[in-house]
Amino acid sequence: MKQKLLSLIIGVFCTTQIIVAQSSNEKVAENWIKQHTKEYDIQPHHNFKMLFNRKGPSGETLRYYQMVNDVQVYDAEFTIHINTLGQVSYTANTYKKEIENINTAPSITKESAALIAKNHIKVNGDISFQKEKLFVYDDLGATKLVYQITIEPRATPVGSWEVIVDANTSEVLSAKDKSYYHKHNKGKKKKNKNGSKKESSSAMRANATGKVFDPDPLSATGNVYGGGYVDGNGQGDTDTAELDAARSDVTLLDVTFSGGQYSLVGPYAEIVDSENPSRGLFEQASSDFSFTRNEAGFEAVNTYYHVDKSMRYINETLGITLMPYQYGGGVRFDPHGLNGQDNSHFSSGSGEIAFGEGCVDDAEDADVIIHELGHGIHDWVTNGGLSQTNGLSEGSGDYWAQSYSRALNQWTTADPSYHYMFHWDGHNPCWGGRITNTTRQYPGGLVSQVHADGEIWSAVMMEIYDLIGRTKTDAAFLEGLGMTNSGTGQQDAAIAVRQAAMDMVLANEYGMTCADVDVMTARFSARGYTLPALNCNALDVDEFEVKDISIFPNPTTSTITIKGIQQNYDVEIYNIIGQKIIEKAITPESNMINVSNLSNGAYILKLKNYDGAMKFIKL
Image 1 (cartoon, rainbow, N blue to C red):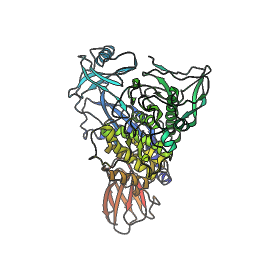
Image 2 (cartoon, rainbow, N blue to C red):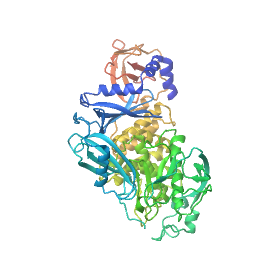
Image 3 (cartoon, rainbow, N blue to C red):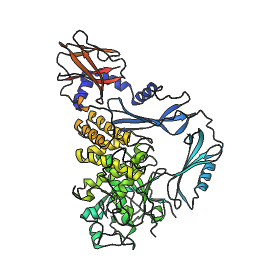
Image 4 (tube, helix red, strand yellow):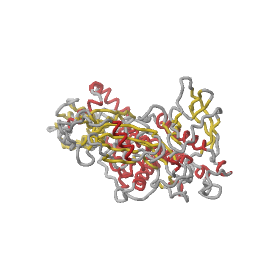
């Protein structure tokens, strides 16, 4: 498919190659915003800055953030995705036309606002992360200048707290925990220091060994919770012969070796000690990190291994560049956090992940680890535009975890556990866990509870996974998620994922085919999502040429003439993403088509009942 497209674009219409080379994606995106000024009623006092762009196998996504007097508007942007042929193929926006043109000079300092925020949420003890940023804000119905203060206490209150403070009156307008938890209830506690291991100039990378649950002791052995496979019935992380035998020997790639000590700090994962209880960083002189589960080091090793493996898979196997934007280096994780509560969270402010210790320690179950990493992935791929609309991020985290565990082929489709999420941490007396095969439909099955609603999203993604395979589904999922923003729900996410797949068909990535796109269309539609018409197969023809018939002029600015026809034809014109945009009857005497209203770019022209197709360029 790619060869046919490229041979046409580069060989036959070499002018196109020059045009694309001269027009950057940024210019294409800015022209798109200008062309849609009236549609979105963009106000004269609003402007936009492109503050983030991300390139991937489906193209490039550019994020233009709404500004007033050079201050960013809170949660407002145009998100524009441009495919590998230089065309806008997907857009999303949270533009706020009601934002007024206010004075953006604050009356109080960010330090004063931070102190107000800290007192408001009653921080007890040290703070592991704090950030202040000025925004224009209208979430309460009036345009105000505010400070967004992000505070992550080491002890209490647990969470990544966003406090909105009026930058003129000092009033606290909002205070929310912006952490993303892997289950609904925070649970009970199980029974001060903020640290991370930083590399010195003499540090080097080395491989180490360790023992982990991959992904959990029940899946690894084909068992269910009970007998020797229990947490300890309130007696702590008791070792049993069964649980010891369920551990797998693994290589811990690229840990840090410095000063005679090995530490769990690598290019894709890095241990920190940012939340209570303080368990340390588990540095040691030996490269053998083999612990039993009753030792605190086991959770540290288990987390390092699974975070590192997942991030390597994204960046090296899939070839999709994705890392935290909040800091340089690998994903930071605290294997013992949340004051020991029976829950885990991704903190959007610091970009760190922490795991609780109640009942089954969360960091003993790869489903929990990768689910929370999934929140991070959602945050990083959207530059902070993670959405919980319809439980999108919860469902995405569940999908990402299930994608890994199912790839291990430890359960059959006849096993209930085949569809379980949190096999070891949940589905037991601790809590009920979740599933990825709910029969609930969108939107009727939504219950306005993010974890439950997310099951609909993870279920449809796993249906696609089972039909077209892990690699294609994962790539389309990541690329599609990267086109979304903070206002995206499941409906638009489905459109984005399918569009990412379509764009990868055009780019000949991952062996993605029109048949795969059709599978996505069928499964999303069957689940209740409404997708725009798209005919990928309109592009999938044997030859992009028709003997003795040609288009003139090509490229064109206004009209095209079909030369060489000897009879009447019905003409269909498709854009490069397979949507039919013109259908017209022509005759040998009346063979001109007006295309002046089309956007600039490449188009496919087909003659009904004639084997072949042609491409033309609209300038």
